[in-house]
Length: 399
Image (cartoon, rainbow, N blue to C red; front, side):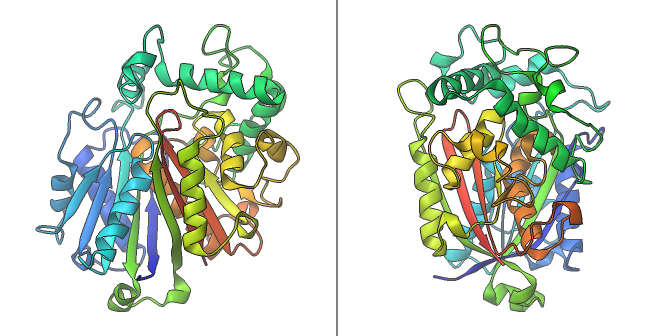
């Protein structure tokens, strides 16, 4: 099987894109990632694009056609994918699969989301309704904001099962905000967060659902943003004039999907996520012990804890402890979410999975800010989810 490499990564700052139109977002993503290595879109044989709220919030479909608007992409095999919050990771897999099928040697994966209005403000009720579509109908009734409510239940169950405190989970968000302060692309880069602020109920920090432990600072951001990767085979790298030593290998990758309904399955031990992560490790020929940097899908703080367990860095029920012991810090055993994660870097949904992979590639190449650089990073892993820990896309990268 051909080896697959990341030739280039590019992203916008996450937060607000203001009045940038969807066609302009797509064009900016494509052109930006090309400019990183001085190529033109004509080099691409295949492509894929991910977004989630493009229909409900932007009234835009057929995103593949918007990509084909970019000079050089006309007439190419381009696919639009949607897998809830795992759409970005799915777009990367889509490109990899096309390359392995022999449809070409160089591809592009783009992900974006425009969730805010042109003035940068957001309509929380409308966004909550749009995101609620990605849950099972049977689990929406009685929930004003469906996904915060669902993950508030996951947080409660995690705390009850493992004796974890609200403070221990809040500490995950605090560490991520500290990382985001050093990341120039992060939405919350100018926001300082202490543990006292993260646990105290005052000001903007409140319980999202009465009777459940999830608080404002436990939640990821409502974000605009885009991200793009150029992915190539070894032959593709030669064609665009790059050496393997200047790139990052996507050595392992896998995807698995559990039933959409949360009820009736053990989301604290998500079978699909664990299977996908283990398959990615096996394909890459590594184990969890080899991983020194990772990005996990912390849509809510409890997922930072569960993510450490899915990675295999923490035993079942010990994910929060892994963070609180400092083992997930930049200078810890494995730097997790050194970007700031979804909680503080931001969560433009379609871009998220691509941004996870791109940031890990930058880590392996020594391209992140010095304060966030994991020393001697050689193997990285990503864990991207969609829905109530339903769709899982996992990758393993090697320098």
